[in-house]
Length: 204
Image (cartoon, rainbow, N blue to C red):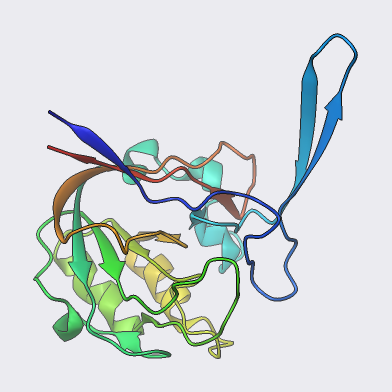
């Protein structure tokens, strides 16, 4: 029997966002007839989310231009043996890449309601190495594919050059390493630099 594994944190005002970014808030209006209407204000890079190439490279594709098939299909969850503020290299992976979508468990960002800069990111060289192995998407359980102190966003730009899409802010602590199917569709935001996703693994 197939089961679904949720990789997305709940969206609420308690959810930490990048310092200086727009936190999630929801304004609720209830009417006498019992109907309820809500509006939200938030950064597009909230919770589990996809970055568009446009986020880092002017003129690159926006989120609505990234092919839908990028965000769903065969996927592998692997542990990345790297410490806080480290950068994941190919040799840090617990298993070699075996699927076109790769989700990395670093375990370096545990508390989703308190932002700290101690999380790990990717080494820029990893992007080209994954591309040669047929990887089209990489995801990570931290707020960014670059460590907090990297103001040049090396890994972001390397992923764009390699033609690899990426997901950030995934919740992977409860997911055993292995092979799954991923569904993590972004909203169709015209010209968007990113989008929240409801990231789900399908397991047999």
